[in-house]
View 1: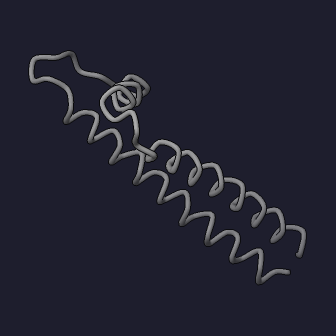
View 2: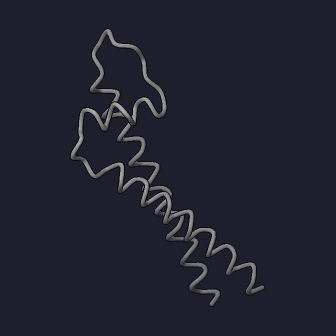
Length: 85
């Protein structure tokens, strides 16, 4: 069980990293879509603007899925490692 728990932790970190990379690229694409003289957007405003400019994109869903599954696998792996001690 300890070997499987180790893989849970590794895959959890990789999925979290993928989620953060997708979020960063999503915010960069949204920032590039703003007009030159427009107001500067931050955080959720960038995500809302991304949805407005790219309504058919699946990247926000993929980002959330990677982040959520990464956190769940990481928690499951850390819990299993602690219980196996």
